[in-house]
Image 1: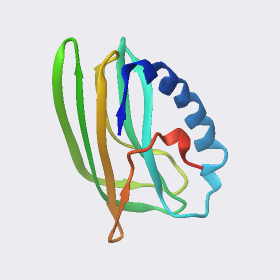
Image 2 (image 1 turned 180 degrees about the vertical axis):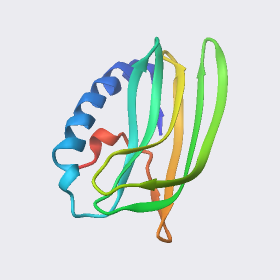
Image 3 (image 1 turned 90 degrees about the horizontal axis):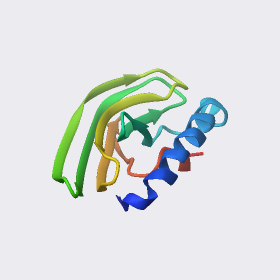
Image 4 (image 1 turned 45 degrees about the horizontal axis):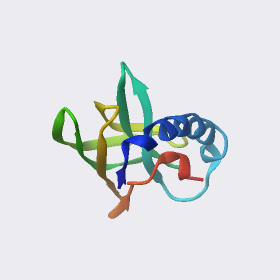
Length: 127
């Protein structure tokens, strides 16, 4: 997923929507686990946080890879590891800070119960 820097502000607003969605509709979901990215502003930087929500307790592995570029140069960041998430709770899986004006692309996936979920979407789009 590549998001131009001019959309960063709009995505940050989506964080508020994501918080409301997680506490309202997603908290009582009876569907399978869902995951995505939450964005916010932190100390003048753009914070990108992988998150999973599941109607049942779940454990598995995640992989979060971010490539960013801007006037200050470029970076490649990879995170991953094992996780355990409680039922009906938004659980953060990885977090990075990049320049707020940067363009970036993300690869985020979760493997649990023998299935891999593509989590590249903004968490505000989950229902």
